[in-house]
Image (cartoon, rainbow, N blue to C red; front, side, top):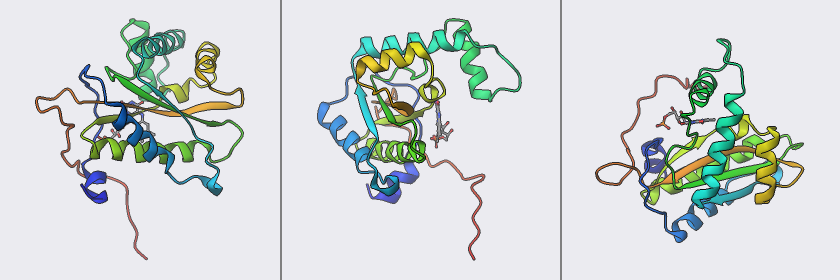
Length: 196
Ligand SMILES: Cc1cc2nc3c(=O)[nH]c(=O)nc-3n(C[C@H](O)[C@H](O)[C@H](O)COP(=O)(O)O)c2cc1C
């Protein structure tokens, strides 16, 4: 697959098979993330490649309980309202059924923290596509990156005191008949361009 094909056929996967992802593939995906550009070549992204089901389950539990405590208000971002609503019903799985979650943190006082992490995440999603893996950008750990219980738990996994999570990405084999991710090109309805 060439780069442009990988870009245009990358789609979000939100239903995954339980099938584990080969370690070599995970290494390739995270290496693609590590090779993303960083502001001033800072290279301060910190990657946590989580394939331990018990750890993913604990993160789901902590995310659900954090959202369940929030007040559901009409002025909130729609997706956040949805997370709160489902969590209050005890029915929320922020990273779906993905067997792997790659969490990316960066220094909290660094101006390009989220930009550097987002570049890494896009690289990882493109690499996943190339390797016939599905992926999805997951934002909930960023929204909750000051939640004390989540922060403590992530500290136990190696997150440093001066770091926060800015994105994560769900990775795994898509739960489709072929096992391949949906690669149908989605039409562009926005993202205006001006050539000058
Ligand atoms: C910054 C950002 C945050 C996102 N957060 C989530 C998320 O938390 N959960 C989710 O299911 N998808 C998330 N997405 C995926 C978008 O919903 C998806 O990329 C968009 O709907 C376009 O669909 P496509 O990826 O199939 O082209 C996020 C994407 C971006 C770029």
